[in-house]
Length: 263
Image (cartoon, rainbow, N blue to C red; front, side, top):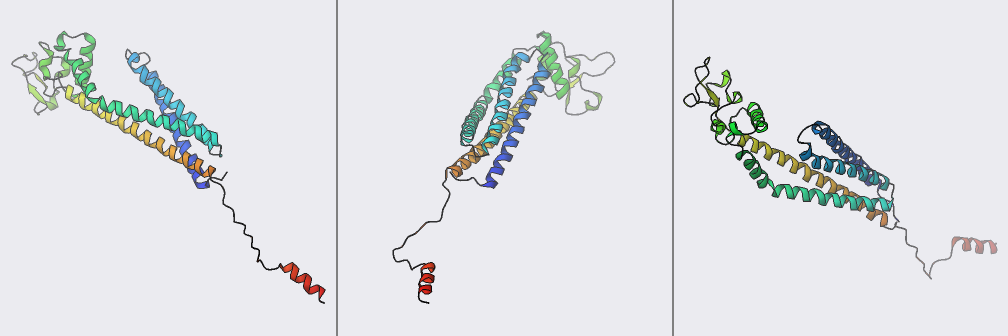
């Protein structure tokens, strides 16, 4: 069995440390998400994703430990590390492809969810609170058709502040919704919220795909390093060839002996 290159073993050791750190960060993110949503109504929807982060983070740390042990030229540990990394690479590629293919379905589900809530003034209180929070955060009004999605009652979160009233961000709806007694106009945000939300969701999906493909690429590097170490360990050490010739000249010791006898 041959000896692995020292530089390669050091690179593999550094890789295992970085890989373990990534796994620890995923565990920390899972713990943070679990704590943040523990008392929220959305915990049932978020729990499967949090569990996946728990499992993946723990497996990454375990593989990093196995790889660190395999660096000491433990063949079985390197084989186990390679198999685990191959399975993880396939998992991340499968997740990435699945999310990329389901992107249109996510957009359609988002549109359907809010389409069923119109008119918003007749929707349940939780939906109204959700939309109003979006309007305050994104400075928009309504979902697809702007203020018209609210029906007969336009909420306070749709109204433009004073600094925006003369800009293109606002539209005058005084003819349909008379202004309050202390105001001369009813100015609301002209842009609907759903396009902003769809763009935000697309950005999240893009970030997720980038992270997923990035981790898959990192895992692939680990597979290459571990396989290279295994190949070097299986390689037989090179030795100088031994040759024999029947016509070899007499040894120096024989010449010395003959010279002594002739004296």
